[in-house]
Length: 81
Image (cartoon, rainbow, N blue to C red):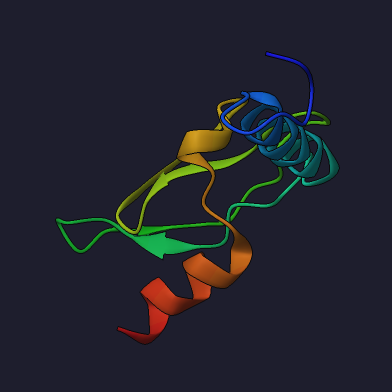
């Protein structure tokens, strides 16, 4: 199929490209402080360039996988609930 033809994979590829670019911009995303499942407090920490905060409300680490990205907004939501 030609680019832009009905049923082509180009729209999906474009969406994926935008998601990867957005994750690169998010590089250096900080992991905010959190409380793990045992109730232990963990201080926040910075992630290096081209990495960002990943994980869950109760466990955080730096990674490059955009599917595991935990934005600061999501982290603050964890703190509220």
